[in-house]
Structures are given as C-alpha cells and as structure tokens.
Length: 306
Image (tube, rainbow, N blue to C red; front, top):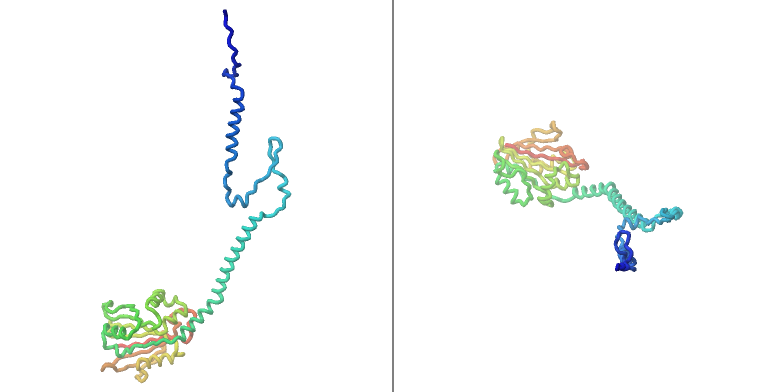
C-alpha cells in the first residue's frame, strides 16, 4: 500500500521553504528601524563661513527630476543681515587702523621737525662746563700722570686709545659733557657723529673735548672741541687762546690755511722750556655733514708741540 506524502508548503523559486507568515513584515520593520536610527543621527556642524554665506537652495521635484525653485530669483537682492554685519564691522576696523596710520604719518611729517628744533634749542642753551685742560702744564708730564690728573678732576672720560696700548706712547681720551653718561655717549660715538641728528650732535659735543697725545716724533698734544657760544670765528680764536693762557702770548703767524682754518700761532715758555702753539677754527659744518647745525657753531683745535 502506497503512503500519501504529507502536505508540505510549496517551495520557493530557489527551492527553499517559504518564509513563515509575518517574517517579511518583521524583517521589514527591523530594516525600517535600522534606517530610522541612521536618519536621526545629528547633522554635521557647519563652519561660520558656511552659516554666513551658504544658503540651502530650495527645490521642486517633478517626477524623478528635481528643479531649483524659481522663487529664489524673485526674492529681494539684498545681502544677508549677518553678512552685512560682518562686512560693516570689518570696514570700521579698517577705517580705524587707517586713521591711526594717517595720524602717525602726519605727526611725523608736520610735528617731528618742530620737536627736533625745540630739542636743538634746548641743547644749545643748556649750561655745561667745558673745563679745557692747560696743555702747557701737561707737556712735561708722562701719559700716566696726565690720565691721573684728568681722573682726579672728576671728569667722565671715554678712552679711545687707552694709555699703554700705543707702542710709541701717547693716548686719546674724550672728556664728556657732565650731563651725559658714558654708555649713552659711547653708543653715539659708535654710531658716528655724522649720522646723528643736529639735536643729538649738539648734546654730545657741547661741553666735550678730545685730548690727543702723540710721542712718535717729539711731544705733541692737541685738544679739539666744538664752540657754540662765541658767535664768530674771530671770537672763537680769542676764547681758545684765553682758555689756554695765551691772550698775551707773542703771535708769530696768523691767517687762513689751505684747509680753510682761521688760525694764530706763536711760542710760549712753560716749565723752563719753549713750546710752539697753534689755535685754529673752522665752521663745524665743514667737519660734520649734519643738517640743521647752527651757522655760528665752530670746530676749534689747540695744539702744543716741543
């Protein structure tokens, strides 16, 4: 007797048993739940530039094709409020910076020359002592004794060629103005007098002198300084002679040399010896190429030799 086969569910096209009823809906709901979870993920954060300048374009969908909404073209052609705010703020900052630069430029062009002239006048009229050394007294002394005398006098000294560094003997030292520090003067000399402003040059030179002692061919001592007070070349010559005790000395030569110096020269006795002396004066502008120096400023040289 042949046994009837049991009622089995119809096979799927692939030959596998058909899924139980409700399985598809369950799977669909699981897929749907998974898709929903992804859809609710937070959107990426936009940068400030994107928030200010990027607008979301609205679209119209017809069938399977999406078109830009033409209403965008009919909206007012105005800059967004946020963009205008940023633009106006940037313009205000730029105007402020430009105004500051313009004010500084105008101040330099218009007011700086006035300030320089005022400083120049203040330096010209300040009271500083010159205290020229008596060269006739130094002639018989050695280098060490001369430097000791200058140091004991309380001068602020800037040694260009210190004592003992020259194998032939001699030295060079600058006596600074009493109201100027050694550090400040040193920086000015390193920069170069020709590169200073007129006001700074007057501040450095007024009340200062340079003593140069040479022993290479006999003994020669020379003092150089700037004269801002005499007012004329002739008066500057007489002032230098008086400072060195030469106002009654015998003058054997005078005139203008080949370099343009107005000079007087002669001989004088000191410490039982006879010394030659020479005082020469020339305009300070002939020595230093500095714009703005007063035309009554002179460069004076006093030399003693044996």
